[in-house]
Image: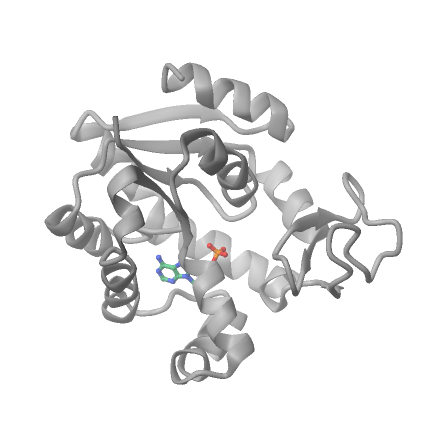
Length: 211
Ligand code: AMP
């Protein structure tokens, strides 16, 4: 059975971390629009140059650009086995666009308290090379600037700085949170408690999807 899944929830809820585990379990591609944008920024491609200031400020990239990116990604054949969309859709307009070219099986909503989100985002450190998410307090690399997995440089995302975090949470509440109601009405919403660690969340995820 194909698993066409969306991961919903505020920034810092652990969507990306769980997606890395769940994609292996389900043998489906993990598609993170945030990662695609960050790669484009690192490459200084036209897309990267266009979105850098928007992302650094914690705002959303416009729907047209984002939907075009996902549509393009969906032309690749690996999508036939299913997908985990992490960080897309983030607006009702994006959800409507997605519905026009793919049938979603479930929207998994990561339910988490604000205090936990602030702690996770404030301490998050990312490897520039392999993309692994470290945490200053909960899961630090041995040397704070070097990735234990690949030797890449470990850094703080510009949008994980205090001001941008506040902006991202406000944007989430205004524009993305309404998606939970949208998917609930369609009978596709699956809520999981995301306050625990990745192993606990993975267990709840499997249970919720009967895996
Ligand atoms: P993320 O890694 O998912 O937190 O995404 C990082 C940033 O990329 C977001 O704060 C937005 O600026 C941008 N972004 C990612 N996905 C989307 C999307 N679906 N719509 C608009 N902007 C997005």
